[in-house]
Length: 275
Image (tube, rainbow, N blue to C red; front, side, top):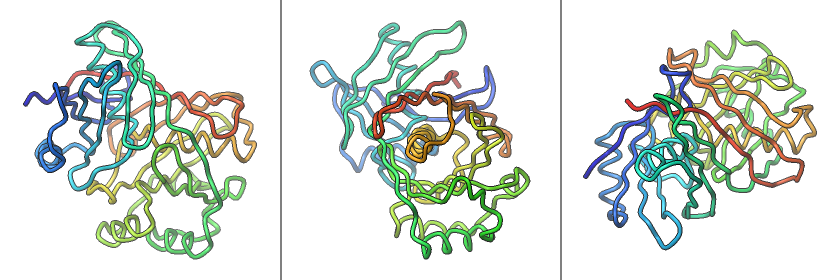
């Protein structure tokens, strides 16, 4: 089985988040997809098969299936453009119908996804306390303009926005304890972030849920963050730029465009490079 390897949301010809892409006539059995994802070893591998005028898609981390993965979708969009030419591709996920655009851009590919619908809710105090304790943080480390929230754009994430960039750079947590907490709460990632301006953020994503300590670029949580900013009437001006992966030495760049309708899809775009 041919596995294509691309880095999504790259910073030009460097950085980005590696993803596996498998395109076939039909989807393998779930056990085979899980095995292949573990063998590939990237945070996500996307599996796609043509289904009428759409592509049936499932996503697997090394240890678990996830309902939606943004960077693997960007990688899939690039792979489809590579083999089928530039275009917009309709995807049927386990819980949503979305699209991804893929276009050749010199030695790179540009891609943009339309996320599943978004929603957010304030995180309960006990859950916030558990997450802060996991990361060795205190309530005074938080940016209280952006209160902790459970956010969703195809999958659930916890968002913690920190006052200081240095605190974000120092992110660390106990993997085993973090995995137990994230799986218990259904947080596919915990997004720690810092707002440089109202439209420019740095983020880090703990992904113990899927068996990975940290993701260098996370399109699903970026879409969920953008939807949350819209929900709280943050002055986003219609788009945010997200810097991720810098603290891992894997610089990644994501852009999220935010429409006015609460709960509607978020457009997340970036480039992808062949590895």
